[in-house]
Image (tube, rainbow, N blue to C red; front, top):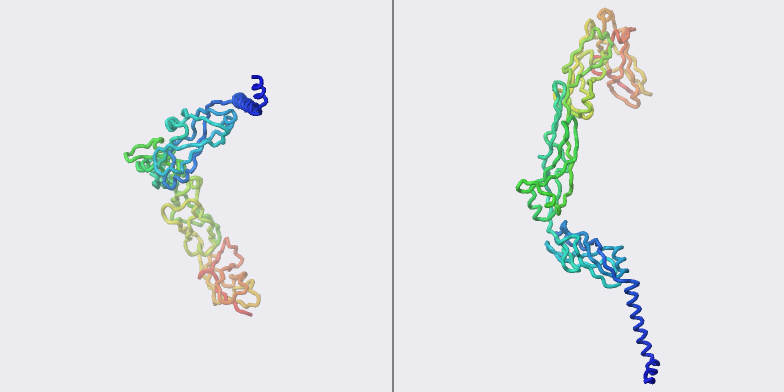
Length: 439
């Protein structure tokens, strides 16, 4: 017996078996003491891969497809730490080709070192299957439509004025919306129910100027009922809001005022004028018209040909952002000078002097006489003769030019009388004909 025991103790196989038993015991101790198994609740983020492939079949994940799932997890302490640091599961949906509900297997997004037991307990309710490794994924068949936006839901009022004799407000009958249509895409059965989309916006007070606000969209079905938001959860709109602009213009009667520079016997006491219209109705930007007191026709010089022969026609200077609403865009100014006479005189060309002739030329007046219209007190005009008249023709700016020209830079002097008393202008045409030839 002793020899058998001794032989057994001397055997290497025995020591090998003892070592294996000790190693296994140590491993069990390490697993259960150093890296024990744990259980915990973890909220996992779900990452869907292959979503782009769904578009090839006109499919899209439904809006109630779960994004998270809460699971009861049992794993080693080491693996539990990894899961808590990266709580993610991956679902590949690239194999789905039809709409409906699909049980899709998932995998962990983190590499584990040991076995992991996972059990969904809720989080996204019935969309989680009863199995441990699948999640229910719902897809919809989608289509797209372009729909013109309606304006029935746009409400506003234009301000009214107590007295419309001077001004009033006018608003566009149809507001401007941007954009006028939107693109929607979503499940076929939902888009088939949509008949029209109306813009909803209330302008808060009567409008006195152009105003822009943001409107929201209201979707109606074929029965004319407003569709609830939950029914449109899977519908994508190219725009959620639109801008609505109501253009409001002021229409105002603005006085017209001429401004005169007196001369040639005309002054404030002996001058009378009439206007073909004393005011003009303008339409445009309310802020511009609201601060406009009058429109000036510009300076009218009474020693000029236009005011000594004919009535003066001036265009109405319309301010920016406005335009003439009704009536002509010009004013005829009739001028009458009381107690002042006019006389026509024919002055020989010898009384004309040419100043600033071009170098190397010999310019000459091309007509024998120059006809003038002279205005002033009757007693002075009766005593004038051609020797009292001098004409200065200025050729500055005609360098290098040869031939006949109608020169408008002409100054007429009447004796020693200042232009405030006696004025003279060229009657025929707007200047004096000059022939410029080489010397």
